[in-house]
Length: 407
Image 1 (cartoon, helix red, strand yellow):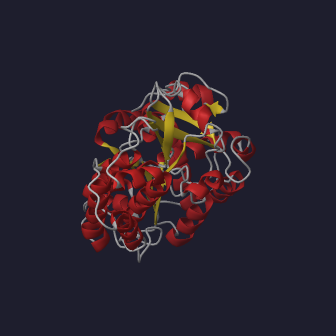
Image 2 (cartoon, rainbow, N blue to C red):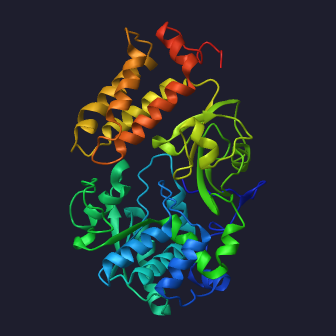
C-alpha cells in the first residue's frame, strides 16, 4: 500500500510526502544539506524533540550520542525500511516518493556518529531504483559516505533492530539476545545505530528548516508529524501525514471517510491496541495510554460495526503466532496456545475458563521473550479482551453480537 492522500484535511499535513521527487526536483525544493558537525546534528535532534518513528518512540539524540560515544570512529549506521507489518505502507511510500530525504538523513547520522559504514535495509523490490539513485547522488557529489543496500526478508520480525543487525551480519533476519545492545556491538561487532527511514527523513528536513519549524506541528509532549497507514473500512486506504494529537476523525476523513459505521480502530498495528472509534480521540501517546495503545509506527485499521472484533483479533493473533523466530519458549509455545485459545473464543467454542485462559497466557508470555514479539502480541490480545467485553460474554454463551446486528 503506497497511495498517498490527495489533499490535506484539517490538521493532516504534507511535509514528508509532498509529491514524488526525483533528485533534481528534490534539490530544487530543499537544496543541499547544510554542512554540520556531529555535535550540531545531535543538538538539533535534541532541540527538535524528534523521536523514532519505527514504533518505540525513543529520543533520536540519545541514540546518536550513545553510538557516537561508543563508536569512536568505528560505528555503523543503518536506515531501516523493512516494514514487516502487513498493515503498514508508510516506509514503502516514503522510499518511493521521497527517497532522497531518507538518504540525506542517513548521511546526517553517519556524520553525527563518525560512522565507518552506512547501510539501507529495505524490501528487495525497492532496491533497484535506490541503487540507481545512489549512483546519481554519487555523480552529484551529495554523499560523504557510500551506502550499501541490503534486502530485507518479507517477515514480521525482520525489521526488529537486532534482526536487522543479524541480517547484515550474514545470518537470518531474526531477533537476537538482548544482553548486548546493538548500540554497543552490532554489525561486524561495531556500535550500530538502526533508525527507521521515516525518522531519517524528518532529520533531513530539520537540518534544513530548523527545530522550531519541526516543533510547530504536533503537541508540546510529542512534537512533529508522523506518517499513518490507514486501512480497513475506509474509502481510500493509504498513507497520510499529520501532527501528533490529530483527532482520529480527521485521519479517517483524509482517506475519504469510513465506508460504514465504525465500532473500533486498531492503532499501532498488529502489536497495537483497539480503541473506540471516537472521532474526537487525539492520536497521541497520552490520549491513547488509557486504552493500552500508542501511535506506534502509525498503523490504523478501521473495524466496521458489522465485523466481529474477536474474530479479527484471532486472525491477527494466528498470523503473529506463525511469525516467530523459534528461539524462545514464549514464541514457540506461548503464542500458538494463546492464538488457539482466542480462536476458540472467536469461533464460539466455549469451555470453562476460556476467557481467563486467554488473558492468563497473554500475561504469561509478556516480558519473557528474546524480543518484544510476544509482548506486542499479548498487548493486542489484552486490548481486545477489554475493548470487546460484551462480545466476549456473548461468545461464551454461543452468540455473536456482530452477526446478530447488535453492533
